[in-house]
Amino acid sequence: MLRQTSILTKKDVSRTWYVVDAKDIPLGRLASEVAILLMGKNKPSYTPNVDCGDYVIIINAKQVHLSGHKLENKNYYNVSGFAGGLRTRSAKEMITSYPEEMVERAVWGMLPKGRLGRQIYKKLFVYADENHKHEAQKPVAYELKYVGGKK
Image 1 (cartoon, rainbow, N blue to C red):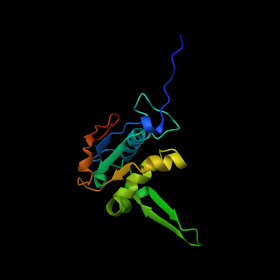
Image 2: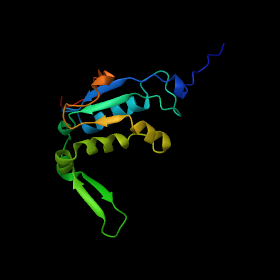
Image 3: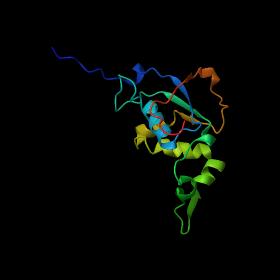
Image 4: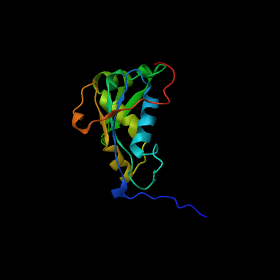
């Protein structure tokens, strides 16, 4: 007897709100686990062509951990498209001035690109400190699984 695989449709998806505390968590570990939650790969009903993931709120983005010499050596680039329009910012500058953007860029790098990826990315909310405006959604605290090293 063959067992049928369940294929989710958009109306069958049930979503949960999670809060992830980024304090002293390595940036890459945080981003990879949050990407899994956003895509819905942690659910048994995961369907690759449907946005079946959950909403994720990341707090304390300003206190995320970067290992090694990344604070001095890692750079973030933006190009305006005009001649001489390259803007370079170090990770130290990003974590002090733009911590939300730094975490968002790390998560976006681990999401699929295209229409579905942009739709998934809209379910991510990042805040520099522990205050967020999503208390009405009753978010559940999520403990990251694969965090090693500094705790």
